[in-house]
Length: 329
Ligand code: BYC
Image (cartoon, rainbow, N blue to C red; front, side):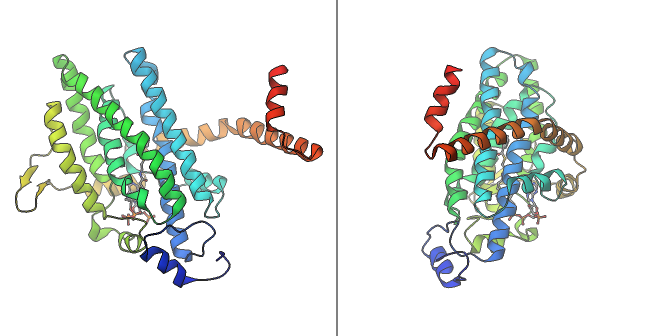
């Protein structure tokens, strides 16, 4: 089957059998558009998400913490690359996706529009933001679209390391001086509610969930995953000796879950509208970085062209020989 032969029956059979849809398979236009929207938003989140933590690289309190943070921020860039690659298999160009981000036509996660005010925020991001991300992303490893699902497998492995480093960082602060403990608590107070918003609007107000679940792009609804995250975090907060800033949090025997207080959806909507504390700063920095990196992209493209021309002239693969030549030069 090719993308030019409409074949809804095979598409439906693939979904029903829980198999993967691959780039050359026929798929409904709306399925393709939904994937482009979600994967692009996900990729944008990864690269914009580098900014809040990168803010602390120069001020990390030790060489060990600095090395870990640099590696983590670099991983996020890698996640962006896997995801832009997955989006490209759907027939969109990376440049166009980046233009859409820079012009505000595509979104990135609301969470990255909040500031990192202290070193403890790096821990809170690892524990809560990466923790929320994993909760949301593990089911995406079973997404019906093959390239997205496979990218998620690798991303989840790295995210789980990120989450643990954040937890370990917060634990060190929580066990430290009174000032360090207060700093950790303040960070958790500020990141808790925005982390719950990462899962998206409540199910009743989520326009895409039903269809995305029918297509097996999403495997769980926003509220289901949010609840799973709350249930995981409550005992972890107890181990940390920190308090989650929600007086309504309590175990509900009947439901077998923790109840939580109301989420401020007006704040979520404001952040999506561009009125969050750091929206302008984040997108401004992204546009600047893109413009300043133009020469790197041009140089890489020129190098690739040069290699291709040489290969064509020789009529054989150039890669190994080229490397040798460069070393010699
Ligand atoms: N922020 O019908 P809904 C990371 C939008 S990065 C902004 O529920 P859907 C990390 C939504 O796009 C991890 N917008 O949508 C990186 C839709 O807008 P439009 C990021 C949001 O798609 C660096 C509208 O609201 N993770 O871990 O079915 C350092 C209605 O929503 C948000 C992902 O991207 C939001 N929070 O479900 C550290 C996961 N929520 O297009 C860490 C992949 C919703 O109708 N994405 N919107 O105008 C998903 O799983 C789904 O897209 C969502 C939303 C659950 C987020």
